[in-house]
Amino acid sequence: KAKNPNEPEFIQAVTEVLKSLEPVIESNPAYEKAGLLERIVEPERVIMFRVPWVADDGTVQVNRGFRVEFNSALGPYKGGLRLHPSVNLGIIKFLGFEQIFKNSLTTLPMGGGKGGSDFDPKGKSDGEVMRFCQSFMTELCRHIGADTDVPAGDIGTGAREIGYMFGQYKRIRNEWVGVLTGKGLSYGGSLARTEATGYGLVYFVQEHLACHGDSFEGKTVAVSGSGNVAIYATEKAQQLGAKVVTLSDSTGWIHDPAGIDVALVKQIKEVERGRISEYAKRREGVEYHEGRGVWSVPVDIALPCATQNELLIDDAKQLVANGVKIVAEGANMPTTMDATDYLMENGVVFCPGKAANAGGVATSGLEMSQNSERLSWSFEEVDAKLQGIMKSIYHAADDAAREFGHEGNYVMGANIAGFKKLADAMLAQGIV
Ligand code: NDP
Image 1 (cartoon, rainbow, N blue to C red):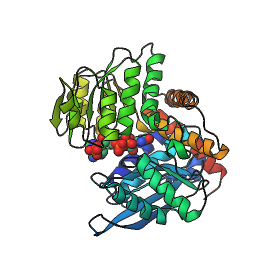
Image 2: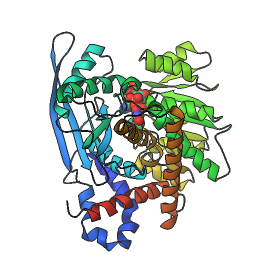
Image 3: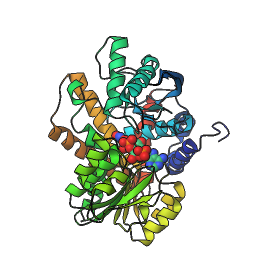
Image 4: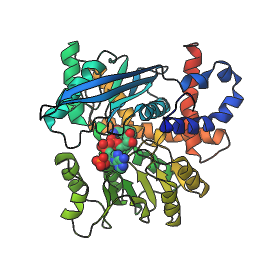
């Protein structure tokens, strides 16, 4: 804490992981001797830079850009770029740290990193977004590369932003390589990448349910957020027979007791870039509420898919009182630590983001493979690989929890399974 003042999210993420790893460290003195824990909490490299750009009204704007290259033991740094006014170094470090374990769990050769800027794409014109992205990439391009560091999308960084950044990278470096993932389908993107995080989240929960003789059929589900992850989690859960009854954004939330109309949400969010309040105006029987409250609706399964620390202790109490059975994180660290503890103590199955939302980065890994072989796989092929990866992540977390005597504790299981592969690679590579 003394070393990283003003980085509460980073401290929170590290504390959770280190707590889980206690039994592994105790049973492996070699890890302690090699200073593994001290090394994994320190990023290999932190890059911060000025991003100047000119707004439509002619004024000069300056944002702050970040890239945290956290750990490359398992492969090139890999992780998204977040564009949101709340972005600061502590948030990027927490996301980069989580990413190391998540990427390890996917079984693909990817290290961990994260980046972004405090730029807010909301309300900006296409021209402004393009000028920002070009300025951002003008600096970032000297630090990344297809075999070095491969950024992707995250909050605020969708296909449009990735396109502008890719164009600028190519222009400066004069090379067409898979340096970013989440690209458009016409220039090297992977089919099923858009759907992957949300679908993968649902596949993870589906595997848990299947292992316990159950399924999504007939379940009521609450989803928060209304961005990429939320939309495709909703779509897949409903395809599997569940009814999703909520969505939200940072202004408010909707309750649609009949089940979310996914086509309408896509129209409002993906085509019109509108607010979720618009949904309630266009569909009968839907309530819209300002502020928080998405977790007050009685459901069997809750899928937080918006942002960090959006499911608090009082929300956990309300979900438990309403009989929730499973909480699975689509977002990164959406549940606070006390809320997580409360849910688990009260018998709720808790699926942590670094395992449950790993489908996005896994499919990014598949996009890198396709770019390297200059081929594109079919939607069905990528989706089948994604399903296989989510199943294997579920069982890796389940097995690791069992091995250390904490059956059903997927927080511990995911941290341990992710760590072991990383630790062995770092030991083999010496003190670097
Ligand atoms: P999007 O930008 O597409 O959507 C984010 C959604 O969350 C929006 O509805 C947004 O509402 C809402 N939101 C953001 N910040 C807040 C806030 N402070 N309070 C309440 N609501 C908020 O992002 P994604 O769907 O891509 O990402 C969502 C989460 O999933 C993030 O935690 C991200 O790191 C994680 N994730 C994403 C992956 C991906 O492949 N996209 C992969 C793995 C994890 P508003 O429009 O009002 O801001």
